[in-house]
Length: 89
Image (cartoon, rainbow, N blue to C red):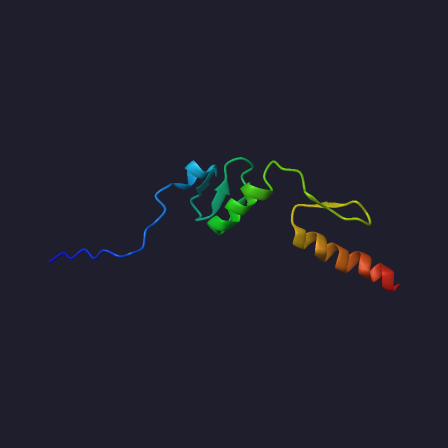
């Protein structure tokens, strides 16, 4: 006997390509960006890459040396490791 249970949960019916992301899964099981061919283990990684990195110039700039970074965390790490140690010296 087949019993179908209804749940109160609904899923988002929009496929990911409608939301503007362009990626596919390769034969090794990695998610690949179709624009620059970078590979990620998780779908979230390639979505974040396309949203903030792919084809965009780095948006975070160091106030000390003017180096630019794609991620705020990378800028913070750069300042902490390079410029904070130079202050102490």
